[in-house]
Image 1: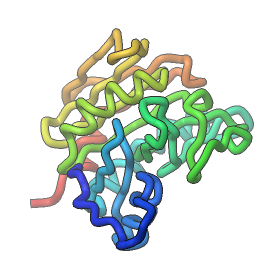
Image 2 (image 1 turned 180 degrees about the vertical axis):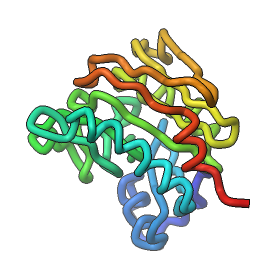
Image 3 (image 1 turned 135 degrees about the horizontal axis):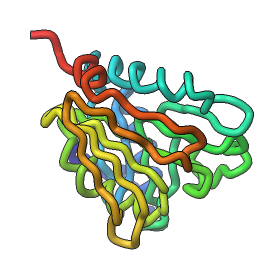
Image 4 (image 1 turned 120 degrees about the horizontal axis):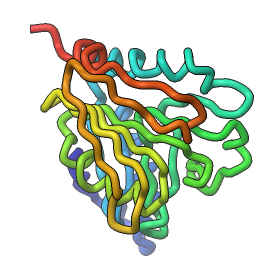
Length: 203
């Protein structure tokens, strides 16, 4: 994910970061615009294998009954961050409490307290997912952060958030199952082989 080159309109009042982010979203359909640590970032539309990996990832969550009366499995839902007055992110996938719509904060983003898990599938922005978002999600006290690192063929499971990061960081290679904590609402594991096959472009 790269920082956007921001040009302010010619008027007396400078744009807020949220106004800049929303303007960029209108100008760049399909791009993901976020504000992390007071910096507006823009990621290009993901490729097909990224979308295929997300669909593959949704299947075990749905089979475990996590999309129902107590929780929902959602793509592209905004998460309001405590790291700055206008900070927010849009994780690829999230498990949230079923009453999440009662926790809207601003700009179509929701209170991090209703998020049980967030998941990112890397594209060219893998450094953002593996570094900047680790600190951001930990500060927001997201209990479980899963990173599907397509570049290196690994699944990262981060749990037990602390102010600067996560206390536990487990890495799983192909051929292994990546277990997730029951705190998300069910006991399940992710098949690393299956996810990496889905997320790999055909040569």
